[in-house]
Length: 447
Image 1 (cartoon, rainbow, N blue to C red):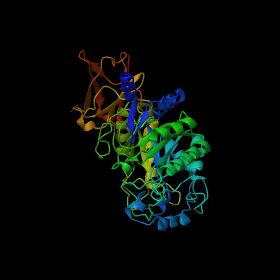
Image 2: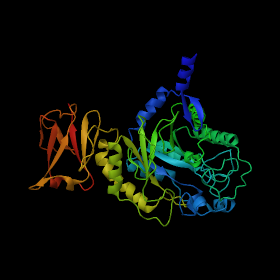
Image 3: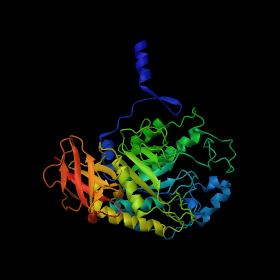
Image 4: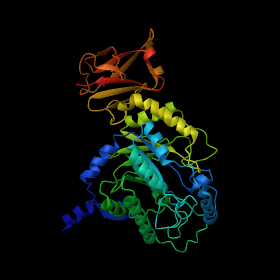
């Protein structure tokens, strides 16, 4: 009996303050969806909601200390008449993206879809009266883009949501906190998202950190995940909790950090799992549209981030904050167009690739697929130069030898001279006239 008890205890995992059985077994369709998720290294994140009306970022209800009822008046003026979901989807497709993730509901509690669970939504509370989530779902399907939805676990306006670290000044009474009731509300909304928009391929949760100071708070996430997978087994689930994945999750995300890094201070506990990986980052500095934030990263910076993500076996989910009138900022459209130009000539070196055993080099990083190894020269100044010729020296693992003479070339197909030493070092001769401004990719066909 003692051995049996020890075994049963070993089959439990402490998650969110409760012990739950390690029972999640991904369906074959889910495992296939994970593979397809990694085929598209670039995704587009869209933080769009009622907060766009204020043009002060997605946390404005919290950061400005507004009363929830005063904040909600903005719904009467939220009328994005210039919203053209098909034009958005075309711009994302032309940029080389493979999927889109839209905020269906953020921490301010406003739903951007047709929901029967609340009237605080785009249909019932605004003059716009159109289903933003639904229109983009259709547009993405038409453009061949996978469709993901962000959903906040936090709600700064509902009385049944248990008060956490944030949302203390919104005017909630605090006398009706009931997580069981709120949990049912979330289940009802998630069911609507899954059933109303059949092409939703993933759910992107956020907000567990709101109750980090109370480790005894039970979010009931494994139960939530089991409910979702029961509705749609192939649907991928990720959660932005800044920790290692928990029971029932299908991909791991990193906010503002590449896997293995912690520059933003949000990945200190995030060991890299064997699940598909995704890094999310802003195109400028804010997630939601903020009029005082014109500091957009350059096309070169964004491409380098994409390449470095792929080199760490991760997708890049790059964010845009649409404006209240339904337009994407012109700076964002400019960056999308520039990324698209690069992707049309280089996507084979990132999409469908994985990381390699070669560590990051002073000159750049490496990616690989089943037949080729790709050297991404991101910092050409780090290469030794003589008589106008650069030398790229890289240590190759024993199973990554060039296929035959002529196996090393630029991505365009132009052959490059090279030597391969017995001790496994490949030296590629690269004329400086062939260096590209953003990323010079050298392709090595493997045996």
